[in-house]
Image 1: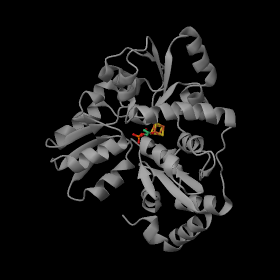
Image 2: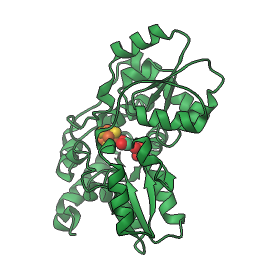
Image 3: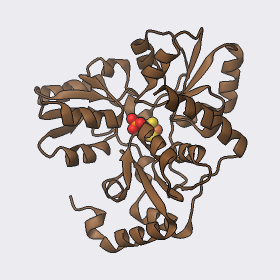
Length: 308
Ligand code: 13P
Ligand code: SF4
Protein backbone atom coordinates (compact mmCIF):
# COMPACT_ATOMS: atom_id res chain seq x y z
CA UNK A 1 0.00 0.00 0.00
CA UNK A 2 1.34 3.41 -0.95
CA UNK A 3 1.12 5.67 2.07
CA UNK A 4 0.73 9.44 2.40
CA UNK A 5 4.49 9.82 2.93
CA UNK A 6 5.20 8.50 -0.55
CA UNK A 7 2.21 10.35 -1.99
CA UNK A 8 3.02 13.61 -0.30
CA UNK A 9 6.74 14.08 0.42
CA UNK A 10 6.24 17.86 0.63
CA UNK A 11 3.83 17.48 3.52
CA UNK A 12 6.30 15.26 5.37
CA UNK A 13 9.13 17.71 4.72
CA UNK A 14 7.05 20.60 6.05
CA UNK A 15 6.30 18.62 9.20
CA UNK A 16 10.02 18.00 9.69
CA UNK A 17 10.82 21.70 9.20
CA UNK A 18 8.16 22.87 11.64
CA UNK A 19 9.13 20.21 14.12
CA UNK A 20 12.68 21.57 14.18
CA UNK A 21 11.48 25.16 14.40
CA UNK A 22 9.23 24.37 17.36
CA UNK A 23 11.76 22.04 19.06
CA UNK A 24 8.99 19.50 19.05
CA UNK A 25 8.81 15.73 19.37
CA UNK A 26 6.02 13.66 17.81
CA UNK A 27 4.74 10.84 20.00
CA UNK A 28 2.30 8.38 18.44
CA UNK A 29 0.28 5.47 19.74
CA UNK A 30 0.55 2.06 18.08
CA UNK A 31 -3.03 2.36 16.69
CA UNK A 32 -2.34 5.44 14.58
CA UNK A 33 -2.70 5.32 10.77
CA UNK A 34 0.46 4.12 8.95
CA UNK A 35 1.62 7.53 7.69
CA UNK A 36 1.40 8.99 11.20
CA UNK A 37 3.29 5.98 12.62
CA UNK A 38 5.99 6.62 10.00
CA UNK A 39 6.43 10.29 10.92
CA UNK A 40 6.59 9.71 14.69
CA UNK A 41 9.80 10.19 16.67
CA UNK A 42 8.51 7.61 19.07
CA UNK A 43 5.78 5.02 18.66
CA UNK A 44 4.57 3.00 21.61
CA UNK A 45 1.93 1.77 24.02
CA UNK A 46 0.40 3.95 26.73
CA UNK A 47 3.07 3.14 29.32
CA UNK A 48 6.00 3.81 26.98
CA UNK A 49 4.42 7.04 25.74
CA UNK A 50 3.95 8.25 29.34
CA UNK A 51 7.58 7.45 30.09
CA UNK A 52 8.77 9.19 26.94
CA UNK A 53 6.65 12.27 27.72
CA UNK A 54 8.17 12.41 31.20
CA UNK A 55 11.74 12.11 29.89
CA UNK A 56 11.93 14.19 26.72
CA UNK A 57 13.76 17.51 26.72
CA UNK A 58 11.80 18.74 23.69
CA UNK A 59 9.91 21.99 24.28
CA UNK A 60 6.76 20.77 22.60
CA UNK A 61 5.03 17.39 22.35
CA UNK A 62 2.68 16.71 19.44
CA UNK A 63 0.59 13.80 20.64
CA UNK A 64 -0.85 11.56 17.95
CA UNK A 65 -3.31 9.51 19.91
CA UNK A 66 -6.46 10.19 21.90
CA UNK A 67 -7.12 12.97 24.41
CA UNK A 68 -6.40 11.08 27.62
CA UNK A 69 -2.93 10.25 26.28
CA UNK A 70 -2.16 13.90 25.51
CA UNK A 71 -3.52 14.84 28.93
CA UNK A 72 -1.18 12.29 30.53
CA UNK A 73 1.76 13.87 28.72
CA UNK A 74 0.65 17.33 29.95
CA UNK A 75 0.31 16.03 33.51
CA UNK A 76 3.81 14.53 33.44
CA UNK A 77 5.44 17.50 31.69
CA UNK A 78 3.57 20.63 32.80
CA UNK A 79 6.39 22.90 31.65
CA UNK A 80 6.03 21.65 28.05
CA UNK A 81 3.46 22.62 25.47
CA UNK A 82 1.41 19.52 24.58
CA UNK A 83 -0.61 19.59 21.38
CA UNK A 84 -3.20 17.17 20.03
CA UNK A 85 -3.91 17.59 16.31
CA UNK A 86 -7.63 16.83 16.73
CA UNK A 87 -9.46 17.64 19.96
CA UNK A 88 -12.31 15.30 18.96
CA UNK A 89 -10.05 12.26 19.37
CA UNK A 90 -11.46 10.88 22.61
CA UNK A 91 -11.78 7.44 24.17
CA UNK A 92 -15.30 6.07 24.81
CA UNK A 93 -13.89 3.89 27.60
CA UNK A 94 -12.38 6.92 29.37
CA UNK A 95 -15.75 8.67 29.08
CA UNK A 96 -17.54 5.84 30.89
CA UNK A 97 -16.72 7.24 34.33
CA UNK A 98 -17.19 10.76 35.69
CA UNK A 99 -15.71 12.39 38.79
CA UNK A 100 -19.16 12.27 40.36
CA UNK A 101 -19.37 8.49 39.73
CA UNK A 102 -15.94 7.91 41.23
CA UNK A 103 -16.60 10.10 44.27
CA UNK A 104 -19.80 8.25 45.10
CA UNK A 105 -18.03 4.89 44.70
CA UNK A 106 -15.31 6.13 47.07
CA UNK A 107 -17.96 7.21 49.57
CA UNK A 108 -19.35 3.67 49.56
CA UNK A 109 -15.85 2.22 50.09
CA UNK A 110 -14.04 4.84 52.20
CA UNK A 111 -10.97 2.71 52.93
CA UNK A 112 -10.48 1.46 49.38
CA UNK A 113 -7.35 2.22 47.36
CA UNK A 114 -8.29 3.52 43.92
CA UNK A 115 -6.50 2.18 40.87
CA UNK A 116 -7.34 3.90 37.61
CA UNK A 117 -6.48 2.66 34.16
CA UNK A 118 -4.47 5.22 32.17
CA UNK A 119 -7.49 5.38 29.82
CA UNK A 120 -9.11 8.03 32.03
CA UNK A 121 -9.26 11.81 32.06
CA UNK A 122 -6.79 13.78 34.22
CA UNK A 123 -9.59 14.58 36.70
CA UNK A 124 -10.19 10.86 37.31
CA UNK A 125 -6.46 10.30 37.78
CA UNK A 126 -6.46 13.16 40.29
CA UNK A 127 -9.15 11.31 42.29
CA UNK A 128 -7.14 8.05 42.24
CA UNK A 129 -4.28 6.68 44.32
CA UNK A 130 -2.38 4.93 41.58
CA UNK A 131 -2.61 4.63 37.84
CA UNK A 132 -1.93 1.55 35.69
CA UNK A 133 -1.72 0.64 32.01
CA UNK A 134 -2.49 -2.57 30.15
CA UNK A 135 1.22 -3.41 30.45
CA UNK A 136 1.27 -3.37 34.26
CA UNK A 137 -2.30 -3.60 35.67
CA UNK A 138 -1.69 -7.08 37.14
CA UNK A 139 1.63 -6.01 38.71
CA UNK A 140 0.06 -2.89 40.22
CA UNK A 141 -2.78 -4.92 41.76
CA UNK A 142 -0.28 -7.50 43.02
CA UNK A 143 1.79 -4.74 44.63
CA UNK A 144 -1.34 -3.56 46.48
CA UNK A 145 -2.43 -7.04 47.53
CA UNK A 146 -2.29 -6.22 51.24
CA UNK A 147 -4.75 -3.35 50.92
CA UNK A 148 -8.13 -4.30 52.38
CA UNK A 149 -10.12 -3.04 49.37
CA UNK A 150 -9.20 -1.92 45.88
CA UNK A 151 -11.45 -0.01 43.47
CA UNK A 152 -10.47 -0.48 39.82
CA UNK A 153 -11.82 1.91 37.16
CA UNK A 154 -13.04 2.07 34.42
CA UNK A 155 -12.36 -1.10 32.37
CA UNK A 156 -14.09 -4.17 33.78
CA UNK A 157 -12.28 -6.64 31.51
CA UNK A 158 -8.80 -5.35 32.33
CA UNK A 159 -9.86 -5.30 35.99
CA UNK A 160 -11.05 -8.92 35.85
CA UNK A 161 -7.80 -9.95 34.14
CA UNK A 162 -5.65 -8.14 36.73
CA UNK A 163 -7.77 -9.58 39.54
CA UNK A 164 -7.34 -13.13 38.24
CA UNK A 165 -3.59 -12.71 37.73
CA UNK A 166 -3.00 -11.10 41.11
CA UNK A 167 -5.42 -13.35 43.03
CA UNK A 168 -7.14 -10.35 44.58
CA UNK A 169 -10.83 -9.39 44.52
CA UNK A 170 -11.50 -5.92 43.20
CA UNK A 171 -14.39 -3.47 43.29
CA UNK A 172 -14.85 -3.07 39.55
CA UNK A 173 -16.43 -0.22 37.56
CA UNK A 174 -18.67 -1.36 34.70
CA UNK A 175 -16.81 0.20 31.74
CA UNK A 176 -15.44 -1.37 28.57
CA UNK A 177 -13.66 -0.59 25.32
CA UNK A 178 -16.21 -0.92 22.49
CA UNK A 179 -13.46 -1.92 20.05
CA UNK A 180 -12.01 -4.76 22.12
CA UNK A 181 -15.28 -6.21 23.36
CA UNK A 182 -16.32 -6.44 19.70
CA UNK A 183 -13.75 -9.20 19.21
CA UNK A 184 -15.63 -12.45 19.82
CA UNK A 185 -14.76 -16.04 20.67
CA UNK A 186 -16.19 -16.96 17.23
CA UNK A 187 -13.75 -14.52 15.57
CA UNK A 188 -10.79 -16.22 17.24
CA UNK A 189 -12.06 -19.73 16.52
CA UNK A 190 -12.65 -18.83 12.84
CA UNK A 191 -9.11 -17.50 12.48
CA UNK A 192 -7.63 -20.46 14.35
CA UNK A 193 -9.45 -22.81 11.97
CA UNK A 194 -8.13 -20.88 8.95
CA UNK A 195 -4.57 -20.72 10.38
CA UNK A 196 -4.08 -23.76 12.64
CA UNK A 197 -0.36 -23.13 13.21
CA UNK A 198 -0.90 -19.54 14.33
CA UNK A 199 -0.38 -18.26 17.88
CA UNK A 200 -3.08 -16.03 19.36
CA UNK A 201 -2.21 -12.78 21.15
CA UNK A 202 -4.89 -10.83 22.97
CA UNK A 203 -5.16 -7.38 24.56
CA UNK A 204 -6.46 -7.48 28.16
CA UNK A 205 -9.36 -5.12 27.28
CA UNK A 206 -10.92 -8.14 25.52
CA UNK A 207 -13.50 -10.30 27.31
CA UNK A 208 -12.38 -13.12 29.64
CA UNK A 209 -13.69 -15.71 27.12
CA UNK A 210 -11.42 -14.31 24.41
CA UNK A 211 -8.50 -13.99 26.86
CA UNK A 212 -8.94 -17.69 27.68
CA UNK A 213 -8.15 -18.58 24.05
CA UNK A 214 -4.88 -16.63 24.04
CA UNK A 215 -1.31 -17.92 23.89
CA UNK A 216 -0.28 -14.56 25.31
CA UNK A 217 -2.04 -11.53 26.83
CA UNK A 218 -0.20 -8.25 26.36
CA UNK A 219 -0.33 -4.49 25.94
CA UNK A 220 0.35 -3.48 22.33
CA UNK A 221 4.10 -3.14 22.88
CA UNK A 222 4.14 -6.43 24.77
CA UNK A 223 2.57 -7.97 21.66
CA UNK A 224 5.33 -6.40 19.59
CA UNK A 225 8.03 -8.03 21.73
CA UNK A 226 6.27 -11.41 21.68
CA UNK A 227 5.91 -11.26 17.87
CA UNK A 228 9.67 -10.74 17.49
CA UNK A 229 10.66 -13.44 19.95
CA UNK A 230 8.21 -16.26 19.20
CA UNK A 231 9.27 -18.94 16.75
CA UNK A 232 5.82 -19.21 15.18
CA UNK A 233 5.54 -17.62 11.75
CA UNK A 234 1.83 -16.85 11.96
CA UNK A 235 0.07 -14.79 14.62
CA UNK A 236 -3.61 -13.93 15.16
CA UNK A 237 -3.86 -10.50 16.75
CA UNK A 238 -6.79 -9.53 18.98
CA UNK A 239 -6.46 -5.77 19.33
CA UNK A 240 -7.13 -2.62 17.31
CA UNK A 241 -6.04 -3.33 13.74
CA UNK A 242 -3.86 -0.23 13.28
CA UNK A 243 -1.20 -2.11 15.23
CA UNK A 244 -0.79 -4.71 12.49
CA UNK A 245 1.05 -2.14 10.33
CA UNK A 246 3.87 -1.96 12.89
CA UNK A 247 3.89 -5.73 13.49
CA UNK A 248 4.21 -6.41 9.75
CA UNK A 249 6.87 -3.74 9.27
CA UNK A 250 9.01 -5.13 12.10
CA UNK A 251 8.51 -8.79 11.19
CA UNK A 252 8.48 -9.09 7.39
CA UNK A 253 9.05 -12.84 7.61
CA UNK A 254 5.85 -13.42 9.62
CA UNK A 255 2.13 -13.35 8.84
CA UNK A 256 -0.28 -11.41 11.03
CA UNK A 257 -4.04 -11.90 10.93
CA UNK A 258 -6.51 -9.55 12.62
CA UNK A 259 -8.83 -11.48 14.93
CA UNK A 260 -11.64 -9.28 13.62
CA UNK A 261 -11.63 -6.95 10.62
CA UNK A 262 -14.03 -4.74 12.57
CA UNK A 263 -11.57 -3.95 15.38
CA UNK A 264 -10.97 -0.33 14.42
CA UNK A 265 -11.00 2.62 16.83
CA UNK A 266 -12.49 5.59 14.93
CA UNK A 267 -11.02 8.06 17.42
CA UNK A 268 -7.48 6.84 16.79
CA UNK A 269 -7.98 7.37 13.05
CA UNK A 270 -8.85 11.06 13.40
CA UNK A 271 -5.21 12.13 13.37
CA UNK A 272 -3.77 12.69 9.87
CA UNK A 273 -0.52 14.13 8.56
CA UNK A 274 -2.32 17.30 7.46
CA UNK A 275 -3.63 17.80 11.00
CA UNK A 276 -0.15 17.18 12.44
CA UNK A 277 1.26 19.93 10.22
CA UNK A 278 -1.63 22.25 11.09
CA UNK A 279 -1.01 21.62 14.80
CA UNK A 280 2.68 22.47 14.49
CA UNK A 281 2.04 25.58 12.40
CA UNK A 282 -0.74 26.97 14.60
CA UNK A 283 0.48 25.52 17.91
CA UNK A 284 -2.98 24.04 18.47
CA UNK A 285 -4.80 22.34 20.12
CA UNK A 286 -2.99 22.88 23.37
CA UNK A 287 -3.91 20.46 26.16
CA UNK A 288 -3.85 22.32 29.47
CA UNK A 289 -4.51 20.82 32.88
CA UNK A 290 -5.38 23.05 35.87
CA UNK A 291 -2.42 22.99 38.33
CA UNK A 292 -4.42 21.45 41.20
CA UNK A 293 -5.54 18.53 38.99
CA UNK A 294 -2.10 18.22 37.39
CA UNK A 295 -0.38 17.85 40.76
CA UNK A 296 -2.70 15.14 42.03
CA UNK A 297 -2.90 13.25 38.74
CA UNK A 298 0.91 13.29 38.59
CA UNK A 299 1.07 11.60 41.99
CA UNK A 300 -1.08 8.70 40.72
CA UNK A 301 1.09 8.35 37.61
CA UNK A 302 4.24 8.72 39.69
CA UNK A 303 3.19 5.86 41.97
CA UNK A 304 2.66 3.67 38.93
CA UNK A 305 6.08 4.51 37.52
CA UNK A 306 7.65 3.82 40.95
CA UNK A 307 5.99 0.39 41.26
CA UNK A 308 6.95 -0.63 37.71
P1 13P B 1 -1.89 -0.04 25.03
O1 13P B 1 -1.41 0.73 26.17
O2 13P B 1 -1.79 -1.52 25.21
O3 13P B 1 -1.22 0.37 23.76
O4 13P B 1 -3.46 0.21 24.87
C1 13P B 1 -4.02 1.47 24.79
C2 13P B 1 -5.43 1.42 24.38
O5 13P B 1 -6.09 2.41 24.19
C3 13P B 1 -6.00 0.10 24.21
O6 13P B 1 -7.24 0.20 23.65
FE1 SF4 C 1 -10.32 3.87 23.88
FE2 SF4 C 1 -10.74 1.39 22.96
FE3 SF4 C 1 -10.05 3.33 21.27
FE4 SF4 C 1 -8.27 2.34 23.03
S1 SF4 C 1 -9.22 1.26 21.33
S2 SF4 C 1 -8.62 4.50 22.56
S3 SF4 C 1 -9.60 1.96 24.79
S4 SF4 C 1 -11.93 3.20 22.49
